[in-house]
Structure formats: structure tokens, C-alpha cells
Length: 374
Image (cartoon, rainbow, N blue to C red):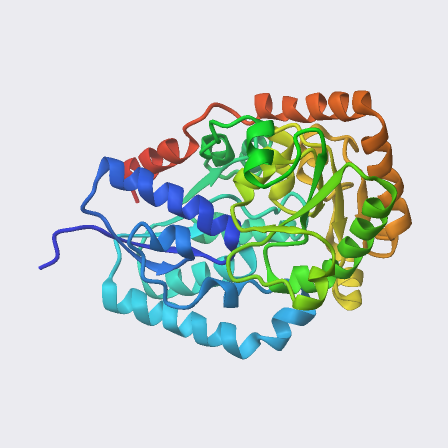
């Protein structure tokens, strides 16, 4: 007879893996005997998870792209249900990744009476609000990380807890920006522009030509620049893009600490950069059919998290047909030329930290999960 608790935990992309790893560590601090099974990446694997499938295969975005990989996701669903059947976990923890996780929640509840925690809310407030009915029917515990999400869910009759943002618990370097620059071989008097073209290979492939074009132009017109690129685990930069002098690094948190300006795909990196007070230009491009369908469904004015949280366009968004090198270069050049704009923008962005709650989100989430009753 099994005595130790077993939690099945499921993340489908890199940020979910980061948050999942921190959550697992916090759970183990309370009860080191809890065992985990499920799907995750290197951060969750470092806490003892043996992932059913490589997480980089899960990170598919867009309607068209998901359809192309439908047979794969059907197989993953089957594998997940088989693992749950074999392990009989005490709790299911789903992390973000709503397209898959909300669907699998329904399938789990149709077969098993296992409590389901949803950690890091799907962005129903942005699109597909009708999915709230799935949450109300199949999710036993909702834990959210953005301050406005608690009121949004409560208004719709969902019992929800806001635990703050786990980014506030990320390990900050004890080195100064200048010291970190030196570590990367960058003169402290030079500006370091970092490129984050996306945490998925699919995103990098979509954005990298534009990002390299912008970089070449900025390097040509500014002698005091260095360019770095943050690459997520499993994401590779093709040799042809290495013709310019570029610093590659897979420690995105440390690299951000050395950065003065960020050119990034829309995603969670925008929020981490905002906390650090880094001015940025945000880019996003999708398959044209996916973009058209998204426009019909998305209800919010902005896509960058700093803009959403502050409800104003503090960072420029270069989306789809507006993602042109000329506009991006012009904005970044303005930031380069004017230290006062760079400073004031950074200070306004860093104020977001005050809206995200107190440090300790992962610990609070662990306590909520372990104290939760069916």
C-alpha cells in the first residue's frame, strides 16, 4: 500500500516549467516525501520529475500549428490518462498551457475523482472567456498570479486565491550590471541590447530574421553597442545568423541583469524585464490564419504584460504587419540616444513590481495546495 503522496503535475512550455520547478521545490520544503509524475522540463526534472514527453515538443502555438500536431497531442492525452490510471495520484496540478490543460482536465474528471489545482490562470480575461464554464465545472482550486485576476474570477463565481507573482522569487545576481557586463566581455561604457526572439523554436524561427536585421542596422550606426541573444533550452540559433558579433547565452535571468535594452517577442520575459526596469520593444508575428482568428477572439487592447497590467502603452508593440524593422530601429535608437528617456522608462516599468504582491508566491501556492480539501 502506498503511503507517500503522489502529485501529477503538467506544464507545457518553458515559463510553466520554471514556475513548476519552483512550486515543486516549495512543496518539498513542506513535505519532502511527496512524489511527482507528469510533464515538465529541466527545472521540474531537477526536482525529481521524470517527464512523460519532452516539454519542447509540447510548445506549439497557433490554431494552424496545433492542428498539424493533433495526432501528437492525442497521443499525449492518452499517455497522461494512462499515467494517472497507473499512479492514482492524490492531486493534479495544471500549470498555464490552457489549450491542452483545460481539455485534459475535462477528461480526467470524467474518469477520476481527483482534485485539480490550476496554478497560473489561463488568460480567459483576454480571450475565450467561455472557457470559464470549464473552470467552474472541472477545476477545484484556482491560483492566480496577476493582481486583477482574483477580482475577474470572483466576479464570475470562481473561488480563487491570488498568491502573487513567482518572478519576484527569481534568484537575482549579486553582481551589478557593470560586473555582469564584464562577465560577458562587454565594456561597461557600452550599451548591451539583448534579443529574446521567443522561448519556442517556432517563435525564434518566425522572428529571428527581423531581430537580426534590426541588430545589424543598430550596430552599423552605433559604435558603442553590443548584442546578446537569450536562447531557451532546446532552442537553437542557425549558423547563418552568427555572421554578426553576438553573445549567446541560455541563462536568461542573468543576461537580463546585464542588459540595457531588450528586443523581445511578447511573452513572460516582458514582465521580468519590466521588474528589472529594462526599456523594451515587443514584437509578435503569427501564421496569417492564426492571426486572423486571434483578432476575432482577443478582447484586450494590448498583448505585452507590462501594458496589460498598467493599462497603458508604456512599451511599444510591433505586431504582425506592424512588425517592421524601420519602426523598431527608430524606437530603439531613441532609447540609445537619450539616457533620460531610458532612465524614466525603466523607472516607470520597475514600478510594476509594487503591483505584483510580495515575494514568496511559490511558498504560498504550496501551502494553499497542501491545505486544500476536495
